[in-house]
Image 1 (cartoon, rainbow, N blue to C red):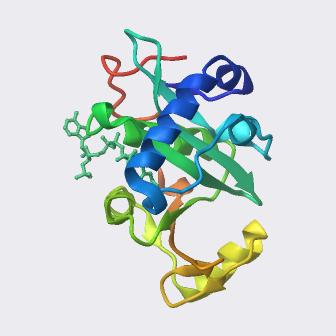
Image 2 (image 1 turned 180 degrees about the horizontal axis):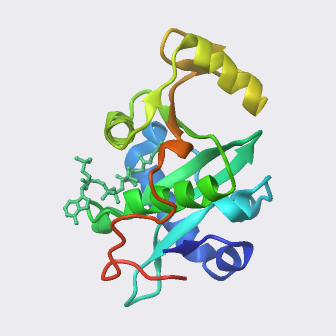
Image 3 (image 1 turned 90 degrees about the vertical axis):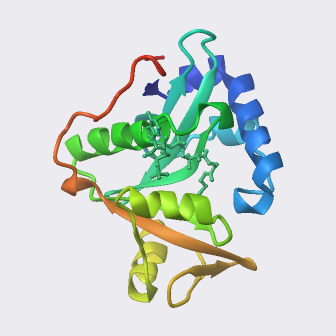
Length: 191
Ligand SMILES: CC(C)(COP(=O)(O)OP(=O)(O)OC[C@H]1O[C@@H](n2cnc3c(N)ncnc32)[C@H](O)[C@@H]1OP(=O)(O)O)[C@@H](O)C(=O)NCCC(=O)NCCS
């Protein structure tokens, strides 16, 4: 598990693009119909190189999971989260977020948010099981204003450009430890 820095992105851009494309092909609009390429992975956003993390297969050195995040106000937003299908249910997704939370907690960030396509029940349930809450109307207004993005807040989801998303939020300061938990070095290693 390591930080997804500009250097790591440059070095592993082919892995990142291949993994993203695989998930796009499998999930379509439950993930995003637009695969990310070099411009999206290399795009410089506030705090992106502090808040983005990746997991690497220790044997092959290939990136098998990532969370790409940036900051808005004193919050962190996860733009993209993916673990390769062959590596799922090993705690990599949890470790990626634990790493993000622990780092963000030390630098006093308040919340971590993510948008989940309305049809992606598996990811939505996964976030809820891991301590995220779904934002409702008043909180959705906070989210839109704080991030400076457009959309229409409905009772329990966001409508924007004809798409529907859940917005989920985790209270970073509730994390009890500054250290990530449940790191399994047999699955991942620092990059
Ligand atoms: C959502 C996603 C990132 C989760 O990744 P993951 O690495 O499989 O997540 P984890 O292994 O941490 O957790 C998955 C489950 O495995 C379980 N698990 C964790 N470690 C385990 C282990 N060593 N052995 C068995 N099970 C384990 C967890 O308890 C969890 O169970 P739950 O789903 O019942 O809560 C992954 O499914 C994914 O890439 N999905 C497609 C992309 C996507 O939908 N992204 C989000 C779009 S908004």
